[in-house]
Image 1 (tube, rainbow, N blue to C red):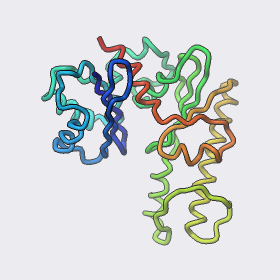
Image 2 (image 1 turned 180 degrees about the vertical axis):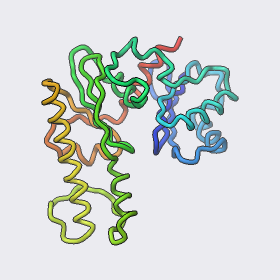
Image 3 (image 1 turned 30 degrees about the vertical axis):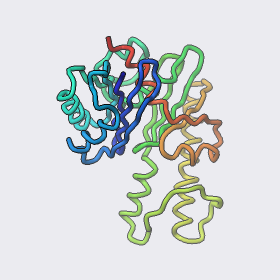
Image 4 (image 1 turned 120 degrees about the vertical axis):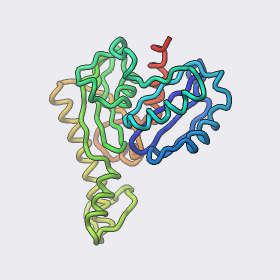
Length: 248
């Protein structure tokens, strides 16, 4: 069995995966305020017998949290807990970007999808809104835009007359009160941002792409942008499963 995890800025997802690559169990926890007590509770959901675990692999954009989890695991088993950048990723994907500065989750997503015939733009609605460009088996970098939730919460926090709202599809562009005006600005503003960046990537590279969207707001935007998109919620874990084969 394998333990695979995705440590993000907002949420950490940990999976128990069988040798055939099928997810057996999954647990989520907030990336803020991780404690030994919380980890003990969450890992018990996955397994009570670490003797069955053969590989442990994480992608992490929060080094402190990875070290906390690694220390916790080290007291349960002698199996080494890897972060994907500790492995030879360049043996499976060419990276035309600053390796040290590319988020591990973005590399896992790229490795999940890459093949010899297709080009991809991966749009991930996470803490940041990221666009990653993959041509064949080459990762070419991407774009980082402000995350939808962070931007929305920052506006509410800084403007005393703007309440916190839940973002949902705006049917009309012109709002008739504060809530509908803010909702329209964020919904149609981000839809426009997405289409514009996708078009600029195509223009700059002179290539066509399959556009894959993932993350919290992917379902909200998938039918409201001009680009044809495919929604996929599991590309990060699929990438981790592929990368785990690099561990002997």
